[in-house]
Image 1 (cartoon, rainbow, N blue to C red):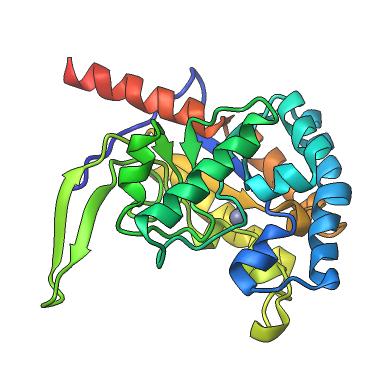
Image 2 (cartoon, protein in one colour):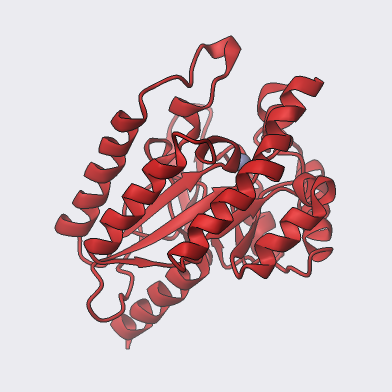
Length: 288
Ligand SMILES: [Zn+2]
């Protein structure tokens, strides 16, 4: 059985909300779509140089601290903007080097990427406590590597929707039987494709995707938030946005409207690190 539990909430708050900002810039086009041409790099440049300052300004307006998942490639390409995210007080999470999908990689290849990401983040003074896999996918070695490098939490999997849990090793054997192993020492703070701005709003020509209505997305996010808020005690709501997507003129006001709504309903805006700490505190209390 999955080991899960509640997040301890500050007095008067009803649900923990994390805004995860996947600051992929150029690297998402390289790592996910194999695109290296100047036009795709320009889309990443927009995300870094135009959209990120807009998003930082909005988050400052509401005094919200968020978790920026930054690939090493973004730090090395846009060092000043990456540094300004740190200076604004946001949490920084490891997000690969050039947005690699680690699933087909060997242990050595995956560990090399882990080290490159850590080195880049150290250049802006960061030693991350958390990890988010760029492709929201694992290899059979990912949990071992995260434990070896001392990560306390991950936010890439979908084994729950509103509660952190301990991820387990799982293997599908030759007979296609799924075999679970032990709980990891890490805490998983789960993501969802349904709570991500990219699939419906970022135009990807080959897939002919990304041109859906913003109001439809707002309604979906609001309904999922209301469920977490009303139906689940000690729940969290983990949203993922990308500066190059959410930072456009028609998207940013939608995020602001959602922030206002969530604040009104009793959201505790927290970093992934704060959600981890409050979960562990509650778990300790339950065990004592
Ligand atoms: Zn990403």
